[in-house]
Amino acid sequence: MEKKISPASSVSGAITLPGDKSISHRYAMIASIAEGPTRIRNYSTGADCHSTLGCMRALGIEIEGQGTDFIVHGKGLNGLRQPAADLDAGNSGSTIRMLSGILAAQPFRTRIFGDESLSRRPMQRIMTPLAQMGAQIHAHEGKFPPLEIEGGVLRPIRYDLPVPSAQVKTCVLFAGLFAEGETVVVEPIRSRDHTEIALREFGADLTVTRGEITLQGRPLLTGREVVVPSDISSAAFFIAAALLVPGSHLTIHGVGLNPTRSALLDFLVGMGAKIRIPQLESQSGELIGDIVVEYSELRGGTVSGAVTAALIDEIPVLAVLGAATRDGLTVRDAAELRIKETDRIRTIVENLRRLGVDAEEFPDGLTIPGRQKFRAAEFDSFGDHRIAMAFAVAALRADGESTIHGADAAAVSFPEFWDTLGGACFSLR
Ligand code: S3P
Image (cartoon, rainbow, N blue to C red; front, top):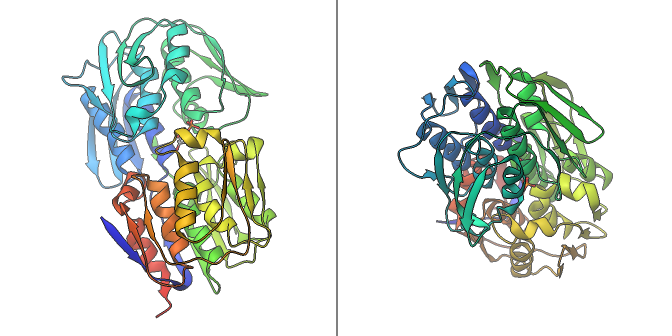
């Protein structure tokens, strides 16, 4: 599918976005192994989170509902059954990596596969700790999906994460739920902590001190009512759009503002962005609030170290914004970007060049000079949802109509993206 995008005269009004992808996956998985029903409201509409629902259903969990409101009939820690067919994780790294922690503890063998992009993404990062816990996992060429997981009784471990990854942390903690005793995960750099928050909400005994997460195995998890906040990583495209197009003034309602996810806002404010959060509330342990953003002239800056890890999913759209800042943007310590849905350093730089923007690529990042003009172009999503949406935002400031090829990729996290963008953008013509 192709989308034509005209330059915008402003990005304004008030919008509401779909539920957070990271939190939705976690609620669906934890609810399935909790006792009794969990009602999840504002569940992500993205294809990735529907891959998770499909896998949980195939594992014998009854899930009622449609749209964004589901009731998951959890069967407790011992309630999953062997699926009749291989599990399909689609494009979703979160589904395959996090669910593997649960599958490793089952008294049966499972095979889980994904699409072409997922089949190229590395799985050793979860295979190593799960093997230490006693699971047997076979992967294509020793590291790629499909995974064949021979589940069984697991032992608890203490695991020092070699890469800052919330998916790996979650995988180990999920496996630790099934092991007798204490599982400890040590994080070098703090990653998103939705799993820790959600596990506590459902009744697990979990403590966090100075980068060490300690979980007591075999807890009684109990079903409950939870509401998913709107996805800050989806909001990032609209925040960037409003910052990029002069005259914009946009309100985004009910966004998840967990401090391990909101580094983008702090970074943007540090560059001079006019962003306000009038009020914060807590919902199922997660912070939530409205974001009000106005067009701003940004200074530019450098993203590195722990900040890079904290806003890793937002780098595609931040790179677009960087080209319009006064001093430009440099991103370092972002080698992880090369193993996302695409090699995002490559796909960002390729599309920036089509936009007529200079950019230099490094093994672990890129640098983009500031004050650059945006030329109308033919962009390619390369099948990556965040690349499709980031360059749709770039097109709003171009000097004519642009085309996004492979625009359907956005549906992986945000099927409503194109309609929401259309509703918030006032055309120049
Ligand atoms: C996610 C963690 C991040 C992120 C991904 C979602 C999660 O991946 O890029 O989109 O929900 O835990 P890593 O854990 O590989 O850093």
